[in-house]
Image (tube, rainbow, N blue to C red; front, side):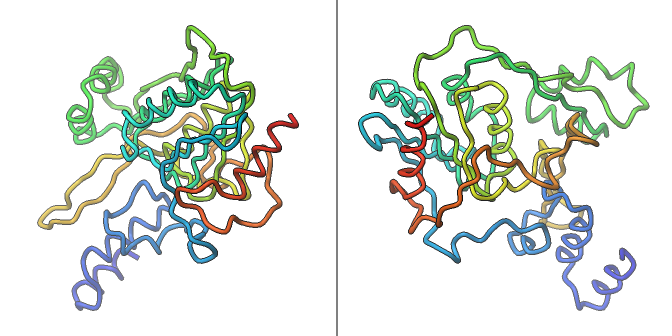
Length: 295
């Protein structure tokens, strides 16, 4: 395959970055990819909701009815930003609503810290989740040092002992425990779809593990993009093209990975898609608001 791609580039029937994109796609891991949107068709595709109904989830924080509050959180990329996220939690608490619908449809990931206020709000039981190992190369270690000195310090503890190992221990397990439990909501819903991926899926797993009062609703499983993650951006030599390289692998592998299947909802909705999903209170939210009251 590599020889054929080289021949295509030499013959100028293929652009260089197209060849790189096809090569990386062979690994079937979307966290390992070029940064060109034109290559999206080379990886596993998510459901194209926009071909069925107007689909552009926007941040929303409002009452659905006297007892139910909606927070739509469509991204962990900083839009909405941390200020908006913290305010949405305050507004929910001020509403006095018994029930909360946390809608993360369309949340394709980003940085985990953005969803932490919601995790703390819904937390009601301590939980332990799988840890991570680090793909060791000198370049990966250097890049991690630029991203986070905390990461670098943690990894450097293993430097002498694990010098010859490809995988370095990074985090044995992830512990979730807060000092207090919020009295509200009494019950909560987390709405997912097939566009929920990466940090969005980490959010689902952590809420499922630490919140017995939260039920996950959806029609399709999440995308499946979390087992190999925490990407760094690398410029290809002699070009202005970038690729993403994941540097950690979850202890879920090899037997309990989610990337092949995604995460299934607790309640699989057997109702039509909404007429639109933007900044509105859609039909799914209204249906779930009624279902929560029955639980």
